[in-house]
Structures are given as C-alpha cells and as structure tokens.
Length: 175
Image (cartoon, rainbow, N blue to C red; front, side, top):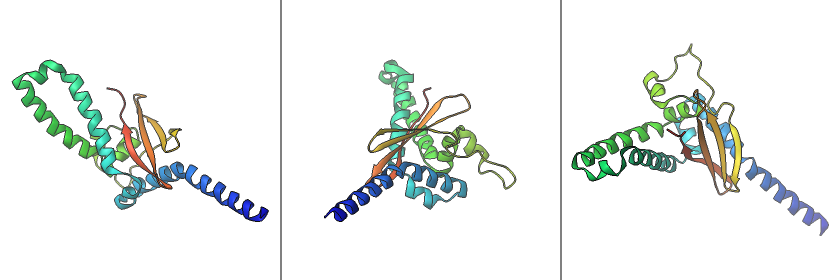
C-alpha cells in the first residue's frame, strides 16, 4: 500500500513539474521556431485567433480614445473611422504573423521588421524574447515581459490548454 501511494505521489509530482515547466518549454519552442523561420512549428505554440483578437481589441481601444466622441458623432469622422478600422485590420494581421511576432519579441517595431524583411545570411538577428521577465499570473496564465529600445514593456501572455501552454495574448506598450 505504501509503495502504491509513493508511486502515485511521484506520478503527481512529475505531472505537476511537467505542467509548471510548460511555459518555459513553450517560450523555448517559440524562440526555436522563430529563429528557424518555421511557421508550422510556431503555429503549434501560438493561438493566432486569440492573439489577433487581443491585438485588435487594444488597437480599437486606442483608436476610440484617440478620436474621442466628437469624431464618432460627426459624419466625416465616421467615414474616417471606417477607413481607420480597415487600416487597423491590416496592421493586426501584420502583427499576428511569424514575422510580426518575431519583431515584437525582439523588441523591434513591427513596421521596421516588415519593411526590412528577413535578415540576410550575413546579418544577425536579435534573439526573440531576449532577457524577458517571467511571472505566473495564475495557475493557467504566465507572462513574459520584453522591453523595447524605448524601455516600453510588451507582455506576452501564455495560457494553459490542458497540459500544454500556448501564446494567447500580447499586451502592447502604452502609446
């Protein structure tokens, strides 16, 4: 009976250790996928629909705050906002790609990464998620915070899906 209880306890500890180490394993897998430019390996580690939704919500909030109620109630303002929403959709789609994620995780501006494209063979790239600050927010949420060149934080939120973890949200630095 004691051996069975000890085995059960050992299995539970191993399972707990596996789940607790999941965020670090996921971050490592994301880094490896980005450095190898392997989109399918990255897709295994990132919940792209959830990332797009989080980025879109933040960008729409920024747009609404920047324009204010006077623009939203004006006919010309409404047309401008409709146009801005189209640009916002394109921006979010550009950020929620392997190249856009690499730029965010390296602390670089997404537009610069997209303009410059992939580094040439002789050019070195910054390491994705270099020097992050890690923190568990809850038993199913883990954050890795990276600072950009202006010392603004970008927070990458990993969420637990069963026993595995996936990148599910990106909190952009304040404007």
